[in-house]
Image (cartoon, rainbow, N blue to C red; front, side):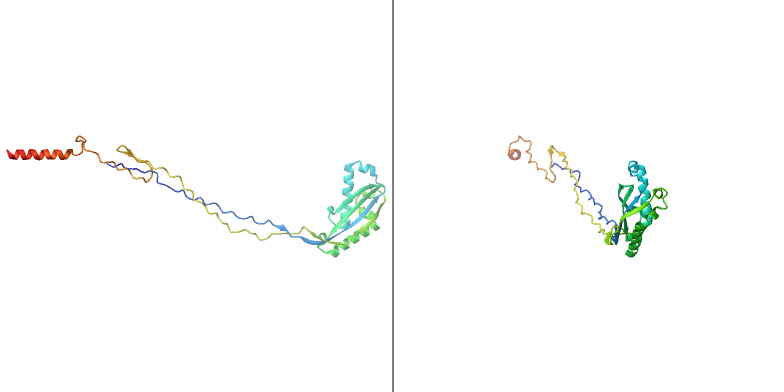
Length: 241
């Protein structure tokens, strides 16, 4: 009987894995630049009865003094508190060198309104500085208030990084999934069955054909022919009797 071959575990291919599409990020909203104008009013305000040495040696007292000073100047100029800059505090009683910043942003974008407010503040600081601090009990109690070096700059055009945020149109592209590459699963090696003492190995390899087996009659070639001749002679002998 010819040996038979049994195959196991047919080759299989795993299902491809599809990657999720990746979207490009959408641009964040940006603030639109706002064109406008600015100008400054510089001045030195002197408080005759203020003690410079005592003031600068006491940081807390100096902070209260500057806070009240800046608040009064901002209200008189019609600008936000942070637009009042104290450039220096010097002796000679107490001299406050100050810059007040004006911008069209604080006046509805109107250059004329800004210039009018700056001019009015300049006049106030030059003619009657004491009136600026009349509502502050500490500053109004420091004796005579005078001013010097009062100057107003010309309006300058500039661009402010302010304004309502404007969102640009999103630039999200259509998702493009990447093309997956199928990965073949490992193919199990065929298992050969052993039949008649012959082992079959290798996928698809035909089993070897066994060689013809000699009959057991002495293992001598032509033994069958000799037997036939003897049988014929015996038959003839029997007939002759």
